[in-house]
Length: 229
Image 1: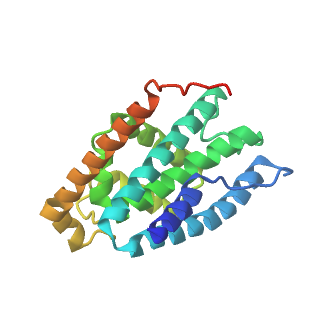
Image 2 (image 1 turned 135 degrees about the vertical axis):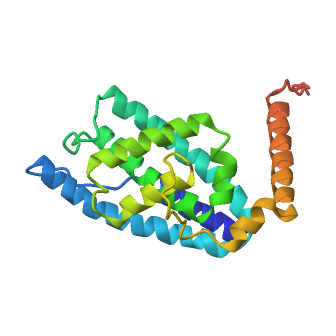
């Protein structure tokens, strides 16, 4: 259990933290190039955190961790989109200098890329959540469009991640030679295996129980009377 918690904390930090960037730069193009170098470092941290989740080798724990992680990731993506839209920030605009806009920009770019990593390495689990959540679908499509126009991904290996993720999730049509390089025979077996279906049922029961407990906590409480000596 401690190992799972450590993995979750590392993934949360990898997914939600923004990349720091310098505040005094002579030209906007230079700012973007500096950010791209910082983005490379960020991506290494994300992949290292994800490696710990892969090596956990416990489908039940992986399911729970990914559940929590994706909810947080899409909440950050939603909030960041709102900030960028309010500021009328276009993805092909010069790299932003305002701290709030810069942080939102970074969150969109980094979380969209990280979601691609997770979707490719855990396709069955991600499909289970993503395919039934229209709001997430709309957010991800917006995030992909934004990322593809920033210039951050142009000509790099990270562009390939976005392309593969789009095809894996059915956002774009699969090319004739499409393969998910991270999909294993275990992924295909899990999709129909009774063990995986059992995990899904148990997780749904756990979630319903948790929701009931929250409702009970919100209910009226009997106040303790005071007695005077």
